[in-house]
Each structure stands twice: as C-alpha cells, then as structure tokens.
Image (cartoon, rainbow, N blue to C red; front, side, top):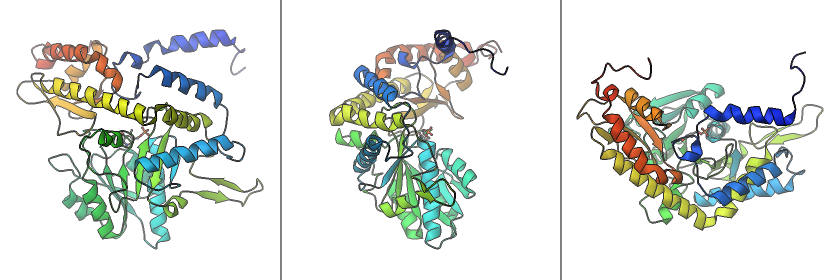
Length: 408
Ligand SMILES: *Cc1c(COP(=O)(O)O)cnc(C)c1O
C-alpha cells in the first residue's frame, strides 16, 4: 500500500492543527510580512464564510457560475476605477507575481503584434524578482538599471539601456525593499518617447496609496492619470485586506487586455477560452475579494489606510530614534528598511537574531532589516521599540561578545 489505511477525519485534523505550532503567530502582531493582518473581526468572519461557500467552485466556466462572473467583473472594474482607469480593462490573478507575469507576456505580445521584436524589458534594480521570473519563463531578456542615491530608478541609466528591442519599462509604486516610489511620470515619459509600453508595479501600493491620497496625504502620481502608463499590478491579498491568492492586473485599454486572452479549438474537447494562464480557477478568491470590497466600502478602506499611516509613522520615527539605527532612504510607504547609521557598531545579523529570540518575525535583506507595517502593529509598537533598544545593546550586536549567534 502506498498511503496506508485512511485515518479518521478528527485524528487528521488534530495532526493538522498541532503541525502548525511552529508557524509564525501573525495574529499576535509580531510578523512584519506575509500576512497583512487587518484586525477587523467582522471582515475576517465574512471572509471565512465566503471562502467556505465558494471553496469548490470553479471560475473556469463563467456560464456555470454567473455569480463569479459578476464578482470578478465588479472587482476588476472597482480596481480600475481606483487606479483611474477604464471599466473592463482588468483581470484577477492568483498573486502579484502572476499579475506581473501576465503584464510582461501581454506587453510582449502587444508589441509583437505591432511589428516590434520585443526582446527585452527594463526595470530598476529595486524591482521585484517577479520581473526576472517572467522574463525567464517567457524567453525575453530582463535588464536591471541601477538606482540613484535616492534609491529611485535612475532615468539616465534607464535611458542608456533602452534599445530597439525594448518593449516594456517598469517602475514600482513603491519598490519592496525600501518603500520608495519611482518617478513614474519620468519613466512613463521615457517609455512614450521610445514607443514602448510602461508597467507600474503597484502590488503593494495599488490598494493603499489611493486611500492615502483621499486622506489628504501627499502621494506621488503613479496610476493611469500618468500619461504613458499602460498597465498596473495591484495586489488584493496585501493592502486590499484579502486572504491569499488574489491580485489584479489592469491595462490602459481593453485592446491591450485582449492580448492576455487565450482561445483554442484544435482539440476534440470543445472551444476552450481563458482570460490568463490558469485553467481551473478557485472561486473563493473572487467571491472573497468582492465581499471584502463590499464590506469595507470607502469608510473601511480609509479607516484601515489611516491605521497603517499611523502605525508606519510610529515605527519609522521610533526606530530612527534608536541609537545606531536609521531608516534607509526616504520611504513614502509603510514598507521600509532600517539599518546601522554608522555611528557605532551594529551587526545586522546579530540584531535579527536578537529580535527573533524576542519573538519578532522580521525579514533580513542585504543591507538591513525590513518591515511591512499593518494596523495590528499599532498595538505592539512600544514593546517592539523596547525590544529593539535592548537588542542593539547586546554583545552580539555591538561586537562586545565573540559575536556567535544563537548557538552557532
Ligand atoms: C509582493 C510583491 C510582488 C509579488 O507578489 P506576490 O503576491 O508575492 O506574488 C511584486 N511586487 C511587489 C512590489 C511586491 O511587494
């Protein structure tokens, strides 16, 4: 026998639950990436109910599930409206990487339909690895341009790397490592000048920056109001407060989106069509995104966006005040890196280890530690800062001890 005898459902469940003991406890507010915890209990309960209701449904054939067809249309139209685009120009995908993959494939195909070679895309060094991944799978070249001292895309460097085969220029709003927003107007203008398409990676910012703008904060232009921007990725499962597996890709017009559609009939199984790479598609994410948007409404999104703003402010200013640490660059988003300021020895790996031992799940990057801030983090900011102040004084961080980490 391959699997052994089947096990009673209750017993399997007990093991599933106990297997999770070592998983990060994101509800405690000590995890700074991966799960964007909104802390809204009514929303969480609604999401669970909708997910269970649609768990088995399949958006592959919208005729069989008119509800999903309607939900997806409304989610993509709402996203387009939020980004100042047009109705019927977007699609839902399984995540940011998936949205970027489709934007790259669609832009390549649109450029080729236009008679171009479409051999390379050009991104800033800070762009998400999803662009390199898409280029890898799609057989095109990805070029990374260095960023300037402000950590934004260096337009002169980009200009030097564009050539006749470039089909897409990319900017991030914001980039993941530092939370700075590239000069989208300049990148889009450069793209228009060279006759290429221009994608804005707003996987992080797409569902948060519009609300910050409405709250009266200064938000640099990044959406379809910027001439020359031809597509935008915006994740629902980040600051759109959705559970995992939901993102959007939106195009300037429907003709561009059409390059993403696929139809096929050269097999005996009937006419087969899909809006993207996936065949069978889960219904829970589509219905869940719709329900999330309905439930939160303007008021809910504004409230959560304001909480993120305040949490970000508390963390960034608190960390900047810790002796020996600084925030890298000038982030314009609730995602940032903090690093040694050079005034005294601070070992980043040691600091990461100290904070981990105090129960904080923080990502380490090449130059420092990385935070993505959610509303839930407001509740624990004092504890975090106290632990951070203690951690920077520890021997393995200052170099006063032999520097051995966590049992190594
Ligand atoms: C998260 C992220 C992505 C990739 O999204 P996934 O949902 O992890 O696939 C792309 N770009 C940026 C800026 C991101 O933050």
